[in-house]
Image 1 (cartoon, rainbow, N blue to C red):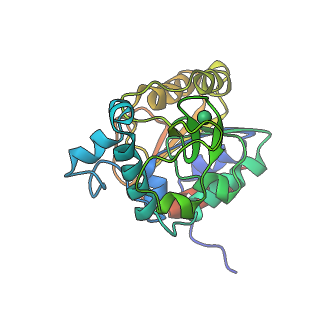
Image 2 (cartoon, rainbow, N blue to C red; image 1 turned 60 degrees about the vertical axis):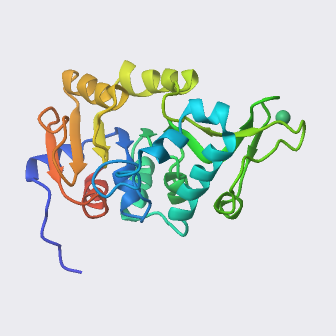
Length: 253
Ligand SMILES: [Zn+2]
């Protein structure tokens, strides 16, 4: 095959070729290209339905767990059949090409893991894992079970109510994952920090980029439109993650 016309700027390509460690940060935009609806924002599943957001809060979980689980089931039904796209696979490829790698994702759909990513900090947890609110036992639901859910499932051990092992709206981030993020992204920032498909409203998404920039690391953002991070990063690439991230992965190492 003839060489494709390069779409990345030449100085960026040159910098990517020297990269030996990478941190990638992803949000809903990556999964949106797989057909998983985003919660909020333009075209978001909950754009015009605040009651769905309310169903997915810690407060509702405690007062009416059936309602929370119906909303979780809705999410699973909307994402039914979603498979990893070229961006997910390219991020897994970056991990195989560098000596040190970490992926911090806000997504709860498991598509990064399905694409082969291994060192993943899923900061918001996963909607397929469960935890018993009475005895703490952890479990797993299949996609099929999740798509069929219309009420809170019960613990096989103690009969207690299960909760999704995910961070609901208004809940704290898990302490051990925040500590891992601190260790792997902030204490010694990777040579490349790549942000993909997130509108970057959360401080824990913005901070690793600021720290990397101050440490003079290579910082790259891929998003369909500019965000608060765009003026901060070394390179803002406007466009589709499924088109641009494979280009970046190809040039690394
Ligand atoms: Zn239990």
